Every structure is written in structure tokens, then in C-alpha cells.
Length: 221
Image 1: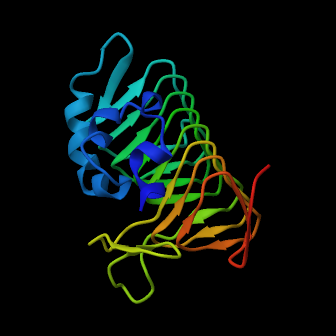
Image 2: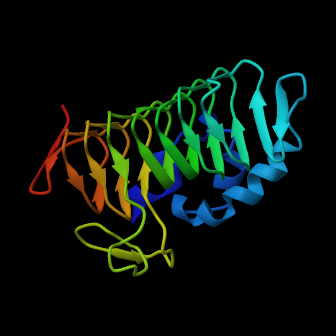
């Protein structure tokens, strides 16, 4: 499933998790390793640029963190990132340079590449969001199947058994998710793709596409 491979989804120059992602073929393979990686990386960060605020929590000195935000470790908040009012970072979170985590947004076990925006009432769990991708207000990743079975990634020809019970969404670089959309467990969205507002997305969506509904996915021109 070539379109789901890390090198076909992400520019690894745009994340501090490059070393971790280079160890895998598919992005979801690193989800169980995020916590350990953060602790290892955090202890190597330049103290002139990053401040260790609490156990396993490193925040760049140029980052803006609202006093009402809650950050639980392990976590790294990159340079010039913005953590806004009442953001809830539950742990195992890498927030890239210039990224925005907005009002009442919740993060858990995630990698946000540089300049990602999850700015309004988003839930992002067990997911990886690529460079400059944006999730519209109220859009979320659903990271556990209703039947609690292990997540399978599917396109129109193949399936991959992930072995994971918790798996939200893998968004490639420059993905735009419309307001109020739900990305179901095992969703993978290719680079430069737009998802219409109020969409219910499942499976693999090709790069350079416009997702209108499950029966209408058109190529961008």
C-alpha cells in the first residue's frame, strides 16, 4: 500500500520526530513508541532554547502557552508554537514548530508536524498530522472502533492489519479537513487533499483529492 508509506505522506524535514519515523515503513507503527521517544529526545534538547517545566515536559522558550492550558508529560512543545486557552494535552504529544493547539483542543499520543493547526475544539488521538495540515473547527479523530476490535487500514484493493486497538488518523502534508468532520479509526489521508465539512471519513483517501463523500472523491486540478 504505497500511498500509506511514511515517505509518501510526509516531509520528514518538518518534524523533530524524524529519527523515530525513519525507523518505520508505515506511520502507525510508531504510535506505541512516541512516549519513549519524547523522553529520549527531550533530554537532548538545547537548554538555551527549551525549558523543562515539569517531569518529561519540555517547552520552547519562544512558544506561547496560555495559563489555562493543561500539559501532561511526556510532551515537547516546539519553537514558536501556540497552546491556546483551555487546550488539554494529555501526554505523549510532540507539537511541532509554529503549530497551533487551540481552544479546548485535546491531544493524546500524537505527532504534530511543524505548522499544523488544530485550533478549535478538536480531538486528536493516536494520530500523526503532517506539515501545514489543518483541522477545521470541531473536526476530530475517532481512535477506537465501536466494537473494540483491532484497526485495519483499507483501500479499494488491499488491507493491512495494524495490530492496534487505538489508531486515529494519519494525515499527510497540507491536508485540509473541513469543520465538523469525523476521521474514523484507520483513516489515512494523502498529501494535499481536502475533506468537505461534515464528512465521515474511513479508509485511505488518495493524495491530491477532494473528498466530498465516500462515493464522490475527485482528483484536484
